[in-house]
Length: 105
Image 1 (cartoon, rainbow, N blue to C red):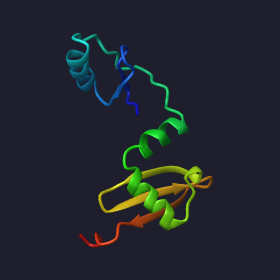
Image 2 (image 1 turned 180 degrees about the vertical axis):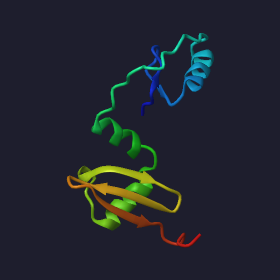
Image 3 (image 1 turned 90 degrees about the vertical axis):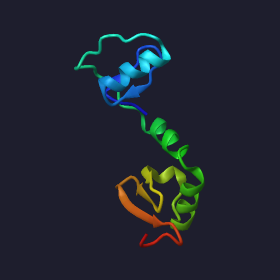
Image 4 (image 1 turned 90 degrees about the horizontal axis):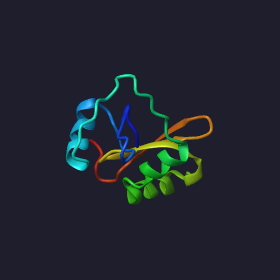
């Protein structure tokens, strides 16, 4: 998913200059100067959805099924160890699915 500082070689995004320099040193054996005002295009909704859904597909699919939400209606979501938070579109209605057996832990 992106960050403020993007590797010019492979396109990966990082949240800090230090992370980008570390990546460049390890992956590409170089450390270029990074401009503080580097502008990065925000990823499209489809790219974000694919990256996030790939994170924990089984837990997400179970949550969507239990909540009765279709995958196409999801604007955004966050998977936690004990719950899944889903923002359902187009109005941004927030729904929370609690993992069975993990409540109050």
